[in-house]
Length: 289
Image 1 (cartoon, rainbow, N blue to C red):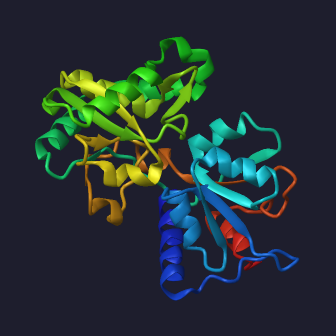
Image 2 (cartoon, rainbow, N blue to C red):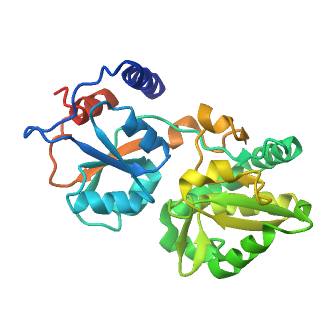
């Protein structure tokens, strides 16, 4: 049933984007509703589909939520797991735990490396239980930190700079990511950590390759693959038609219902209190109710 509701909402948004049917998104004072999201993410695409709502892109979802708490914007749309990580560290922010849409995260591979895509698919399939263990571990990072695999940022930056002109790229797995999207990829105590970081490490080990992590802004991740010896992108990357133009995607490593978009708002904001479905949330955000 959740998937059916999500498909209905997706269709509703598609019609809105094409024909501008969504009502004016303004509050009781006539102020245009401002929705923040990390630039080029599913949340940002979603917000841009809400007509007459001002969608504002941020370098990271944490910055968007900080701006919301400061009163610069009204709401944030972000991946549910990332929302939990950020909100846990900030007073005054709450999650409206109603899925707006579901994502499937996959590895985006250089279009000229079909064999690599096939190899990664094999690793993901054969290590499904290990991937589940990694996910569970990051449900409580602070408790499980000692068992999490981290990579020194400074050392990896130097390695990434050298990899761009490395004469033997076949010996490395060079991965583009955006380390501002915990628990998928983030920096703590000078190290890269995260679900995707450990999946990248697992793939590199299984393929007997040296892992190189290249950290960059999220909107640059998809288009960076295939340049400067970058082999693939592992960055909580959902599959979209636009991204398929520059990437070949592996099979998803998370199921449809494990990753979804939610709204984050101020604890004092009661406008979304009565919402029971994604359609209800959209109606409030766009001023239909």
